[in-house]
Length: 398
Image (cartoon, rainbow, N blue to C red):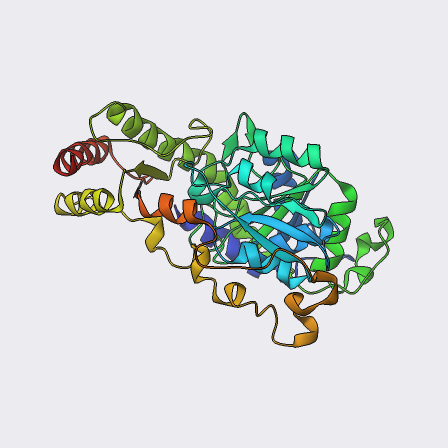
C-alpha cells in the first residue's frame, strides 16, 4: 500500500449514508453507483473501451481468460516468477498453465515463451512483476505471429506504462489487483480492461451469476451462461475511486526516486541493474540489482542492512517462485477429480510435466537479484542515503 487516508474514509461514509452498498444500486432511483463510476474512470486512465471491477486479481485473471474463451484442452503460457494466482487462473477453468523462463528484466522471456507455443496454446500471460514492464513489443509480435491471445497480468503494476501505453491495455485483456500490497488498494479487489466487447461481456456474465437479472442484461449480445460471483461492493468501489486519483502523484514520486538511484549508480564499479524494458514507464517502486553470483548478492544485502537500508531477494519470496506452487507442481488442480484440469481427457498430452529444475535460468536470475524498494514518501536525504549505502555495499563485495 502506498497511501490511504481521510479521503477514503469520507468516501466510505458517503456510501454508508446513501444506503446503497450493493454495486448495482437501486435502478428505481437511478442511483449511479461507485463501482460503475470507477470502471469508467479506470477505462479512461488505461485508454480502453471497457473495464469491469471484480473481487480480486485472481478473479480478474479468471474472468479475463473466460472472456477469451479459454477452457479445457487449452494451454496458457506464463512466467515461473509470479504469484501462484497466475497459474491457478487457467486451472480454475480447466486449462493447463505452462511455465516459462524469465529473462534479466525479471519478466517473461519472449524467446522461451515462443518456444513453448503448441497447437494447444490459447494465450500468453506476461506478468509485470513489482511494477516492472514485460517486453510487450516482443510478446505481442509473437502472439500475433502464432495467432494466440495475450492476457496482461498487471496485478503488481497498477498505474505503470510501457512505451506510452498503460500496462494492462496492450494485450487483448488486462488484469489488475487492488489488494493491500498493491499501488491501488481497497484491501481486496481487482479489475479487467479490454477493447473487445465480446471479451468484456463474457467476463461480465462470468463475474455475476445474476447478470441476466440486471438492468444491462438487454444490452448483452453474448448468450447468458452460468457465471460465478466476483461482484465488488460499493464501499470498495468508493475507496478505489479515491485511490485512482492518488496514483499518478504517488508514482511520479517513486519514479523520481528510482531514476535518481539508477542515474547515480549507473557505471559505478560493482553495480549492475536488471534489464529495464521501459525505465520511464515502470512504477518505480522497485530497484533491481543483478550480481554475478548468489554469494555476491547476499553480501550486498548484508552490507546494506548494516547501513540501515532494507533489501530483499526475489528467490526468498517463496510464493512468487514456481518451485513453491505446491498444488501446481504436484498437479492437484481441484478438490474433486472430475473438476481437476490435470485429469481431464481434453488435457491429455498437454505440457504439464513440471519439475523443480525445469526453469533453471529463472532460478539462477532470481538467486542473483537484490531488490531495494522506493517510497513516495522518501525525502531527498533518504534517497541520498540509499545511494551512498549502495556504493559502500558494492565496494564491500567487489
